[in-house]
Length: 83
Image 1 (cartoon, one colour):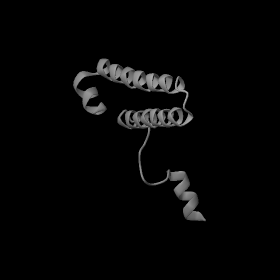
Image 2 (image 1 turned 120 degrees about the vertical axis):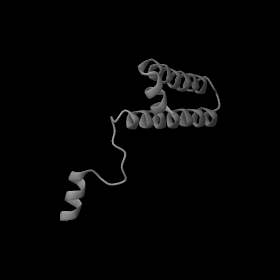
Image 3 (image 1 turned 135 degrees about the horizontal axis):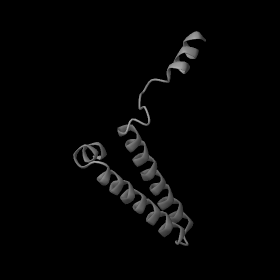
Image 4 (image 1 turned 45 degrees about the vertical axis):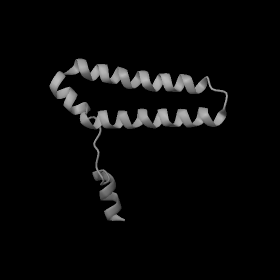
């Protein structure tokens, strides 16, 4: 979704989507911290953080800031093969 929006509409929509994700995460965290029940606070905080981390990973992979691969980095693979 992020890659298609970036290709079609450019940086303006990318920044708007980033702001929307940040708004949802910050609002969820603020509502969670206002809750008195510790379980509800922990559950909402965990879900908000999970949502934010997944969004950050997906955006960084689409922008090629992070390499997403199932194999270890080359320097680790070389060290593991030598062992």
